[in-house]
Length: 421
Image 1 (cartoon, rainbow, N blue to C red):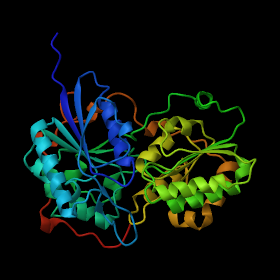
Image 2: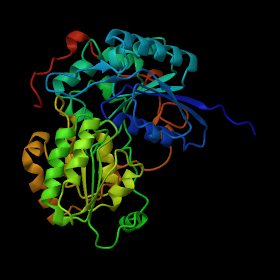
Image 3: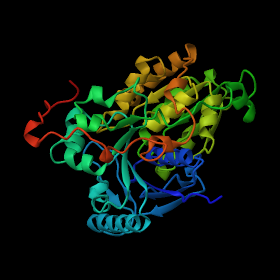
Image 4: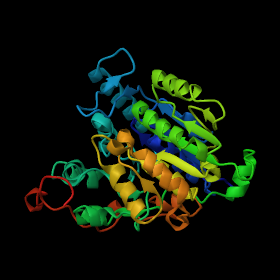
């Protein structure tokens, strides 16, 4: 019997300041490769950490990277190479365009940014290098005014609808519905497709997870992770101070500061715990932990960042969790964490409060009144990702059916400036 031709998939994620985009793209790839139909999967990215998360069958097209920090005064973007920012963006654009034009994917999935960083996806999209293009979104985007400007304004909305036939949202609609929270044009709303969180219920029971790591009955384990960790030094100091105040409440801790945490901050974290009085808990610091989801499943308490990917892992572990939204200039993590806290699925401490000592009280509550959440229905429900893609056996392509047109520019009411109404 003749084998069908592999379905060609390209996953684009721009760069990021953490591991979230890399991790979510790796999960999409892993779920695609479960399909009975063969797939050829390529990743196109400027990320430079976390590639061990990708399945072995994914080939990687690495474009030059940039570093950007979420500071109050701006993003402070700079190339990692000794080239100008203009040259960086031109090289990235040229490499992406050349590859996609040669590869001709059946489906291009772009993570979060419709036009790519500095419009680097635009030439390939306008050449129709992919048969179908799908925009993947994390659920909460930005504040209403910024979201409107970036996705639905007259200068962006019609172009996005012309070049993307579907919008896959990697959260559960019972937690957050974009079309209810934002004033979404009908042409967008009809293309929205919710997949659930990109995390599956953990296959091990909590007892089995603890046995895997040799955690004795009654031994109290804390796991703390801040995603990629870039710029998280102040938060690790606050978190460590709060944990040290509760040192009698746990026996063992695994701290995973992330591969993007600056070396000086990692060394400061190691010095803090090396300087604690003898006889306290056993604290291990590892920049990266391959089996972090299982450690979270085994833990009595999980402390984490509030990126969408981390939140999905926390829900999958049924963890007693305290999360800290880390963003300074965006509100996505804060809104998302608040939604989950309202449902009793975790506790959250805003960044400013965490840096001012509020974690000590939050940890007291988490130790003395642990949560026992069950979020299994919000998660990925098994099977292959191709059922969420346009084409045979999946969803129908919006560009191949009658769709609601984008309203003309003069018909779109401008949002009232200023936050969340």
